[in-house]
Amino acid sequence: MPLESSTRIARELAGRGYNADPEAVTLIAGAEDPEAILAAAVDATPADALVVETDVVKDVLATQAAANRENGESEDPTVSTGDGGAVGSSQTAVAPEAEGSVSGMAAADAGGESGPATGPGDDVAGGSAVADRANRSTANRDLEILGDITGESTGTGDYSDFVEMFRDRYERLSKKLRGRVTHRPTNRLESDPGGEAAIIGMVDDVRSTANGHWLIDLEDFNGTFPVLITKDRAIADQVDELLTDEVIAVEGTIADDGGILFVDELHFPEVPRTFQPSTADRHVQAALISDIHVGSQEFEADAWNRFADWLHTEEAEHIEYLLIAGDMVEGVGVYPDQDEELSIVDVYEQYETFAEHLKAVPADVEIVMIPGNHDAVRLAEPQPAFDEELREIMSAHDARITGNPSTVEIEGVSFLLYHGVSLDEMIAELPEEKANYDEPQKPMYQLLKKRHVAPQYGGHMRLAPEKEDYLVIDEVPDVFHTGHVHKLGYGKYRNVLAINSGCWQAQTDFQRSVNIDPDVAYAPIVDLDTLDVTIRKFR
Image (cartoon, rainbow, N blue to C red):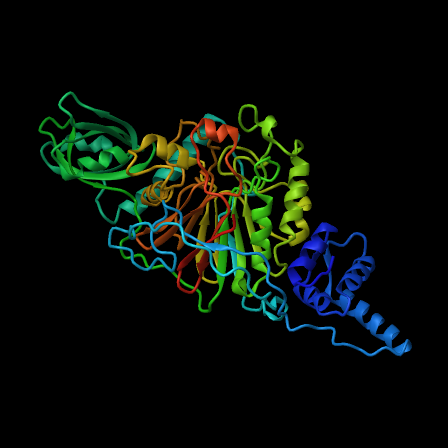
């Protein structure tokens, strides 16, 4: 098979178990006989190496050139300009549930939500010239991982661990509210009947009265106090957003008997309205994907190959980062009768196959990965990163592997990466217009509003008690990236770009049984210098 493009060379090397330096790929592509040079370079690479190095290819080319001189053959140029043949095609599209336009996300109103969704786009011209990625400098790269639970987990599951975690949650979130209200401890409120007061508390219970009002029990370190929101208040339409265990503040008047507070104002920890995101000082892009599910019979390998091919093209030359928000593999025993839908039944073989697919990504792309609920890590959140055995399996591309959730700062732009299991809980608990599967950015907005990625304890979601609540959103991210629900959606909430990136797995029988219609093979591309978004489709 002729190896007329850098993409084909990268794929051939991946098939032989190797990644390669971008310059090495370019040198092989420009050779008179690329197939022979590739074979010789692989033979010359040490057996325990994972990467075909540029120096190895140069030595092979020099040896060939010397042999040609001895045989009296002319020397042809061995380095191409990087302009290879066209590879594959892609679509530019926005899913029906996505907000904003395909060209950018600049128009967010004061409330935070951007304009109406647009429909799927048409095919763009198929294929672009292969990019000369080997000449791209990586000197300006800047990537730092923050707030990772990996190696820091101390929870034993004792009652005292849960107490410490909730105390930490209350302390950190209450600080975000103290600038708006003057908190009165719950055990002192009865001493000032008829007076004005404010409480910062953790929601213990929400219930409606016989007259249609709302009674909420708020808890602080000193006890629990009831507050009442009457149905005629403007804030009554926010009561249906409340979840147990989240931290809020209320202001109002204490009843004459001192036994209840009548609420006039309700405050969430929130993203400040004055928030302005940071941007990179050069034009560089990040691709955001999630839920690859290698090992499933429904894994879209052809779509993945088109995506990997496209990353080698000139059109993708500014993509220097790839962020993967969990579920690399399908896993084993995650849901009933899953074994009937597996193409690979051993989870370690699933990761080995995933690693082979990852090798097709250009070697100079920085990859960051967090685990998801299908991955071979603990299910309870926060989830530590993959263990050493799995890291070794996935080591060929030297990806940055971190926990779920994690904050990653890339060239001054902060990304909050969270797989997104709590989105199920949000969608189940909140009204459909505020959280649903077809618009996954909406429950993401709620998490930003509550400044916590999993505010409610006690539902289907599993939480691991730690001395520190790693699920609090301490710092407002510039970009919030999730997966899990297999739906594409994006928008802006108070200038925070929220993206759920869909999946790479077609509908399974189980998904069909629970009415999940996935958005497959989309790759949102974020311009880090403007935070504009382009949606690419590869299916």
